[in-house]
Image (tube, rainbow, N blue to C red):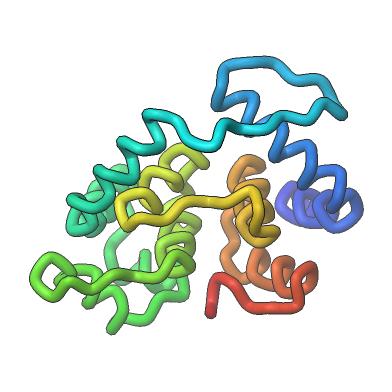
Length: 175
């Protein structure tokens, strides 16, 4: 069995435990603390850095396309390869390209698909989402699944969408 298949199977078999532990561990890591299994952490209602990110996102939504291009160059992937790998239509990608002029705002799922296609880590994925005013939520099971897969370096958009569909009963990345 390939490593990719093991990641998906492990998530299927140990779904509840992985999701719970991942949220606790991710929060602890963001606070530079260590957490033992079973320990519950509650994040503060707001923090100065979160507020700054939200305010910043109001003014830099148009910076999404340059960020995408930067990552395309880093990963040596052409734009047309990117949107095909991300399962994003040429029309939607064209709207992202011209969003500075049109005010178009891509959906969270579109940005997640692009981040997965670019094989970005969780920090870079959050940064891309923040540009458009989104973030991964600990309250949304699909976000937890996406975050977990990224942490395990598993980026297959189609497989992740099928897993989300299996666990939640609804489409998420292709919605």
